[in-house]
Length: 421
Image (cartoon, rainbow, N blue to C red):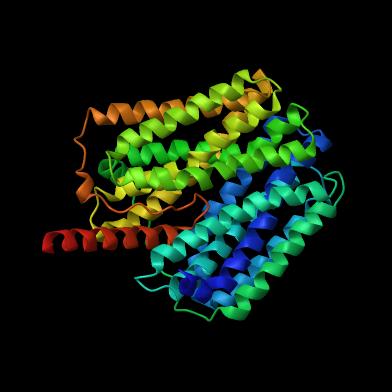
């Protein structure tokens, strides 16, 4: 593992810095938006703008890379993103912030595609699983660390936005100085939603609903904290808890995923998420019950994403996995656009604790649909399923494709080894 990390350490450091800057900006939107008097519905539109841009970037970035190359695309998108983060403080209007969020989302998606192509190129078939795992951990640690940095400044000034911009700018140095250009990135054309649904109804519906959950947690969590008058430090801790749980729950859920019917695990994880959302609903302003609710409700979200990817791949041939991965990322993105809008409107009409109500209802819908699907299709034998890979929801289609292909190869190698023994 040490040798693997030595080959990609500069890329991983760059990713951590990018996530520090991006993670700061996500929470800052809620903090500064509350100070500026934006309503939950207005902030919901601003939040959804990021995922509109992210979805667009995933589609068009490979085309830009093929035209001008990895380095130029990476440098250009990084410059635009850094400038966009500073620009938030220049015009505090919801429409302006929405445009900037679309820009930042587009840039961030393209940055992921380029960084992940370099990362994928640096890995071998034997090390790809470890490299992907290290990459996902680096992303999560960056988001969590960003919340700690928010306590060092005042969200009412431009200092934290400038700090986020600096972190993003710094991140390019280790990546650009260590990475070498690789062949043009090829991302498979996404499978249509109809074909995806035919192959895996639970995977398609579940990942759409999970997109809603993830975007609501990451984008509206700070808005919720601001609405119930948490301090800036408490909001930062609350958002950190939404992501910290994934570091703890990813491994046990991943291990169980390769042992039992994945639909049962999806049902259990979604039920756990719904239960802790219920805890958040009744907790009132109790700080530590809210933190516990965030830890577990947020903690099951990332493992559920990887579960849906693995479950869908169980019913596909290796040749179809790249296209299905693109389709799943697109479906997740659609849910991520819708989720904050629904939550913002609910918070506008029912109060801030509608944040938990929408999240709990969405988790409940995932659990019920998983239960229904168990009555419609038999379980795939555990020994015939693909390996589980801990992919985070922020990954581009490139990383999702690489993870799916690696998982299929690993599962096939394990089956061949068992047949020979």
